[in-house]
Image (cartoon, rainbow, N blue to C red; front, side):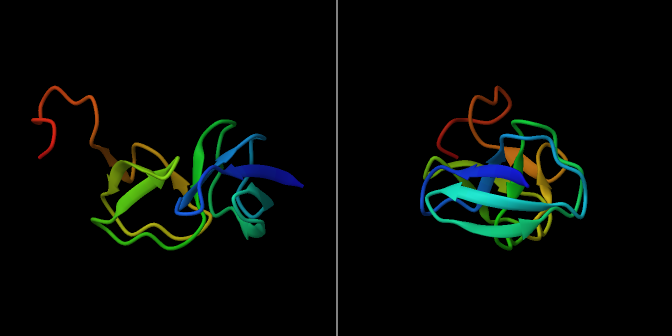
Length: 97
């Protein structure tokens, strides 16, 4: 079974430690344990949603905000540049905005 790590109890994403294909079950470990099913292919080291994330909601990893959802994200979706706006290290936006 595929494995993914939840790094903080407030995180709404998990990091895959195995590459995964759509429809494969994933065992979540770390700060919580459960299973989800991938809705898309997710490469090693990438994130998948562990619960629903509404458009405009914060993406949480390490218990920290790492971005904002640009569309609704369902559990098992690949969470990456196609559905997340990065909020850190952007030269086109003032920090803290």
